[in-house]
Image 1: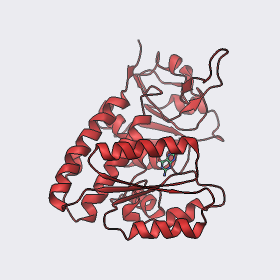
Image 2 (image 1 turned 45 degrees about the horizontal axis):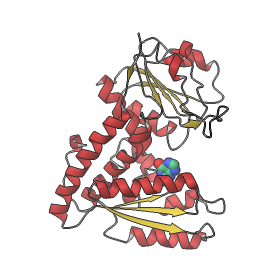
Image 3 (image 1 turned 90 degrees about the horizontal axis):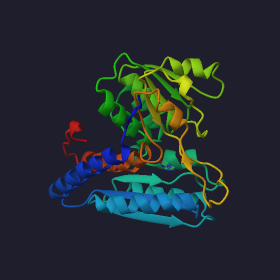
Length: 298
Ligand code: GUN
């Protein structure tokens, strides 16, 4: 029997509708729109696409979008000065500096300069620490989106065995923290893990975030497991095509025959990231104005 498809695109649309309703309520109470600032340094084509999409979706949700584009030659002082200016700007609730930055700029230093209460990416060490100890803060958008899809599908996650493949600061590590907080038994696997197929085979929940096309195979998966595929990889073009296929870190065709539920690529985790970013920006706005927001509303 084939796995149920987890429709991240539809879930993200529902989340954006909730954000839009609460953004309108925020504007009524605060007398201003919630504001998200996005900073792009240089002209990386993929980053330009993301930033444009973020700006459009921010406005579509009834929030103010502030876009700052710096040349690839921008100095660290210039970038840090812009971040400081946004930290002090009352109309800006959330700040996102698009990564990767050009090589001459120190990403950790830039992230450390963002006010943790405007860090809607959840990348600041203060927010990583808050997540680790269970204090309210901002959680990175992609893993939070994955958790929302898991809870929507499975309800209570407590006691389930979860394997996270990948240990990045942006996805793997925060994903593991979120699952621990939901009382899962969590294993973080990575490139040095011994017998990865056997480790993955124990899991009720598999989150794959390694950036290796179609690495996770059908015979690794426990029948009925829920599989969340964070990977977005472009395969080399087939003869006669100008672009290769987009695939995840999971061999979708094989794994869907074994799993209980699986996210497709595209249309699974991908659309969740920006929707959660907008959610985080709205939460930031309510907090910055000292307004109550029902945590179950989003
Ligand atoms: N580049 C790719 N994804 C992201 C993201 O979620 N946040 C930031 N700041 N940069 C990114």
